[in-house]
Image (cartoon, rainbow, N blue to C red; front, side, top):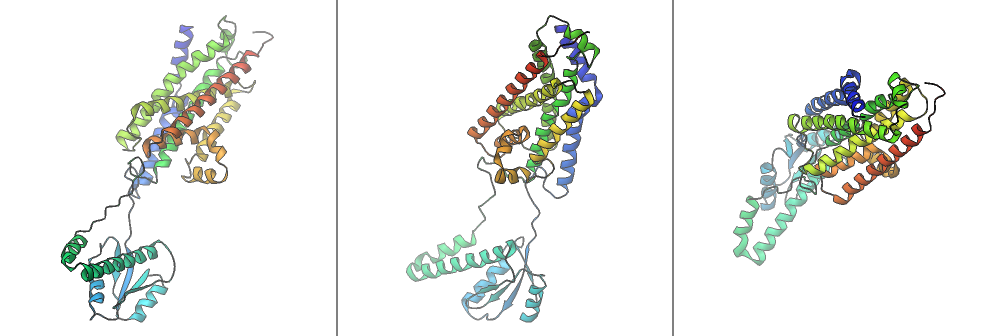
Length: 380
């Protein structure tokens, strides 16, 4: 038995084509993701390039204190937020607004106002700025009327105002819109273990390989053969995914969280479900090796697509219209578990993902044993 396991181990790691799809291809794909997303400033940083909102200022009245204060407020507003365009007349500003060269027009007068031509994010930002100014102005007027001795403190607090809101997840990690692609990539790499186990399972079947002929006449129990192959293949593929994760975290600086034990557990379960699915496919009927490999490609790519490997929002679309698919799709379950570690801490959801994967693995091994136990050969 030990000799067969050693032989199986050497045969697997020496197979260049199989190891390419199980190890090298995910590394290459991860690099391509990083290069593509890095060009837009997203990969690994969670930051996006923000374009200041173009806006025009039309001074209707500048003699009143409130008008002068509002004009000062606009000029001192962070230049990363708004981009002030100058126009000689109100007519020219309105023309630019109709052409969508600017998103709005601020009118400087005793009661400041804003004119927009459509609704959108930029217009909402401009409206929020005006609301913010009016609330602060009302507050200062109330303080000046009711508690004039505190007016200087209030003005000082406004001058020291800083933006204290930063986009964070519930777990304290920065949100990265491209992270879903990398988590789906890890799930895809885990499922790529089907290539290893399909190749190995063929060696159990006498009608598909010479080694299978020798193994089929041994007194070793078929379940022991399956579990032995499972142990060897899981060891190989677990190391493959660890290499991928180290490359993503240490070289590409993609965060996978800081809970190493939980990360190792979900990695183990991810590689295990990939291997178990491959064993199930390999034991299915008397199909040729090429047909089983084709099924393996389908089982790898389709779940990964549904988990967001090609389109990052696919899993959310499925969650809205048919959430049960995300519960039975191993790639979605895996990416969900990695998301629990890298973005927000949800122990209940994480345990649910682990439980689903355990059930899937047990079902795959059980069906595999039932199928290969019933195989009989008239002559060997």
